[in-house]
Length: 334
Image 1: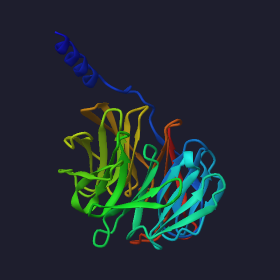
Image 2 (image 1 turned 60 degrees about the vertical axis):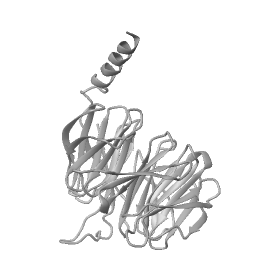
Image 3 (image 1 turned 45 degrees about the vertical axis):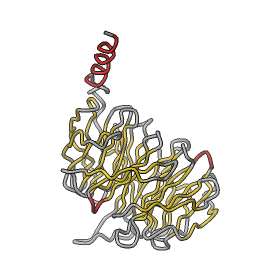
Image 4 (image 1 turned 30 degrees about the horizontal axis):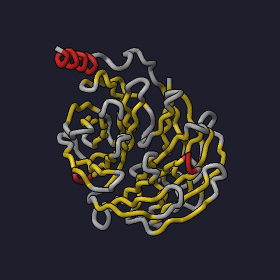
């Protein structure tokens, strides 16, 4: 009887809605005009100081998240892609694709502390793992790279290289010793033990193709992958089983999960922000997308205010080169 009772409680827990269905609608609230030249990539929100770190050309723009006022920059970071923050160590990190390096900087002063070479071919996404106090760098070139560089967040020393293979994109941690890395060209996600650095598995995402953005609900063990064939794929992060798929916009590159509302977001190059709500760990409901602007393909979330930040710029006809002076950050929120 006790076993049956426990199973019944478990069923009720997973069957009942996790989040309120009446979360406020989201809108494009404002634009922070930044200007300058060069391409752009990832954006990172810093909860403690309410700052935005935006990869832009040969530098990282640091903005006040509430006003858009420029607070400083980290430069030079040639061909910058990703930004990771390690607040306990007072360090930040950027991947510099042109130089095949990682810059370690002081979080308070923004001064460069160390340039770490050579991390691999085309260092792109990177994430800080608070549990192991390590920074994991995805080297994304599928022909010459496809590996991870692991860096000590306190010293900036390279600890190891982990061979994975494929065009590596977004990453997420489950908080229990595992890292998930999307392999865009393989339609899979790699699973890595963050403590031993052993490669544990490579899970297929079919029917999803070409995954890029990755987010996670660590509490309910659900991994979200934004795929180029207009699908958000939801995996069981313990087993790799495909739980659900939901339609999303075209050209996704970023993903975020809001644990307060249960909303999963994908930022899409076509100019939309797709929204999918986690009703239960096994049920997902698409919500109306938010119209953003073409090129707004990466995203950062402030969980406290439920605001999302997306960098973009103007482009000439048939071009993906940003028009000089047009770089800006869009602000979406309730």
